[in-house]
Length: 423
Image 1 (cartoon, helix red, strand yellow):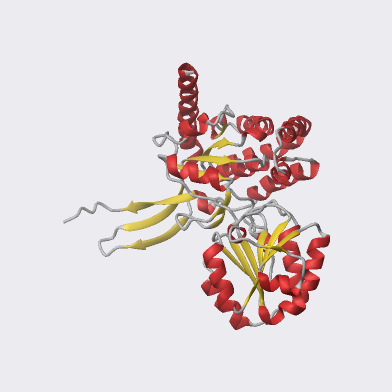
Image 2: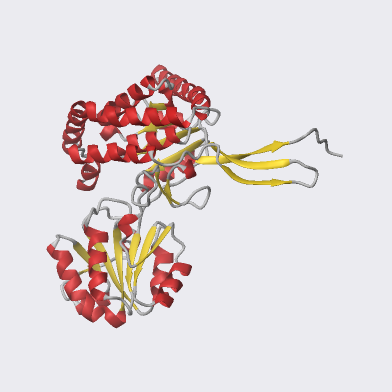
């Protein structure tokens, strides 16, 4: 057993060292070469679609046999449509400006020194995620375009799918004459591989976890490498007393039902008392017709009898399923206070026709994405026009919201002189 663990640690160290060397070469690569690699990735995914989908079918079969939840199964499943979405995501990254080398600011000092603040890659990025195999190609494309090598560790349930996708991506890197180690998949589904990965601070520059609360907390607690958290999405839609109720119903239904297993789906519906009597009966009827289980506060239960009561735990739960908490609030301020207390700083929305109410909400709600009269389901790198995303950061350092190309860079100062020395 000790030998096995030692072997795993050696494998992890080898992969990380290769990624570090590849990162140095990729950081110096010109934009056309990186775009050629991305174009090849998109083509290879299409060419190897049959092998990728076959691997995914086997992953899904094993996941169902293991009793995984319907939400995890939904995230895991690939089909032709989702595979083409992966291809389009890579193609959209090709069209985006290359952030590497951008001069963020420049100025000249009285002594003649010219100082430039220039974007550079972060280096080697380790990404730990669950279920969704499309994350593999999205993260790889963003990291390659931004000049970063990436170590990808997907969940055990998607191991076969990720290996098949990874093989396609590596083939494209080889054809573009870039190191295949620019994109590396951890070669084991053993959880001990994650533990070993988190100790390699000499070789990996940042860890980005995407997954459940328990996974993220474990990584934060044990990592020797800086972590940018992509925590749970307890997202709210608040229907104001000045809302267009038809619009509010459309937005709330979309936020909950369009794809409930995502982190930007609504988990709690807050309704101002002044419109609750008019809004809730029809809204909840529509939701229940869509098989949504409603858990409600006492005020909502009085308006719509027969609803299951919400518990204290419900208000802070990310269901990732067709389950919704509903609460009647006395004011906009009460809605904001509820979001502050139970939310996760991910995505929250107000539906209102009053611009002053909208401004008060936007200023008061400190989430990564705050919406006025729109569904929370738009918190997504592709939907924001960023091409794709590494994930949705709920941290404040060093990035918030959808992390894309710009968020995968840091900066350095480049100073030009003419022989100056400090007196």
